[in-house]
Image (cartoon, rainbow, N blue to C red; front, side):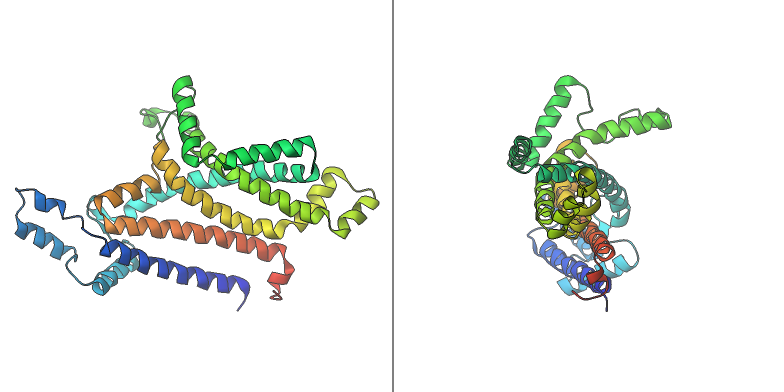
Amino acid sequence: MNYLERRVIHGVLLLAGVSVLCFAFGVMAPGDFFDEMKLNPQISPATVAALRSQYGIDQPLPLRYGRWVESVLRGEWGYSFAYNCPVRSLLMVRAGNTLLLTTLATLLAWLIALPLGVWTANRRGRWDDRLGLAGTTLLLSVPELVIALVLLYLAVRTHALPAGGMVSVGFGGLGKQAQLIDLASHLVIPAATLVLASLPLLVRHIRASVLEVLQAPFVQAARAHGIGGARLLFRYVLPAAANPLSSLLGLSIGGLLSGSLLVEVITGWPGMGPLLLEASLARDVHVVIGAVMASTFFMIAGSMVADVLLVVLDPRVRLGST
């Protein structure tokens, strides 16, 4: 069994474990969706009991989990009590919005962090390196919540960007190009928040990896042969530092995904974050489980992307010697 096959099996087992724990914690939490109906005098206790029996809430935990697994195999992912529809129809739209935001933020963060980390490593100990370390330290100490609130405040004060949501009110009547511009303008604040929050760790890890490679003997030999500057850094040093950076990619995707849930709630981006919050407050158990499972799947998929890069870049992993 090779490296990628083991990683796929681990991912499947992780999804199964998360589903069991999430379902157990969600079901064992006090109260359920139909408890509020008991406070309504217009709804009889018999009606509430019939609804609980219809949706299987009065059944034991193993039977409820078995029914949910059957629903997952049918592609429904359970049934939403609040929205009165299968969970899959809710997750598809919201997960796509979260994936759009997270993918864009990941690309922008790495496009900024990679040259910045290599450049600061090459300028180690100089004033610009110290300035970069001070800037990343400052950003590292600021929570995502504060960054999002500051950007929203600037957007409201300057009216330069939309202060929430995904599209404008008249989005449907716009042309294709105008729709793309409108969507991009709404993406700026949530994407910038995620990029600024993840940038310090990425820059510091890239800088540390490149510094370690810069001390290797082959780098000194390359410099002795007259190879230097950007050619040395990006053609020889950066590929040698790619192993730890590929693992960092998977961790950064998971970090951005978990951080995007909070940012989506603050900025009004219609992704998994607001859906998970609304379902938790309404005690809509199947929607909560579906949202958590979708987030876990995205994190595993990001880790698998990093594993594939590691196999491609490192022949020792590809040949099974590590």
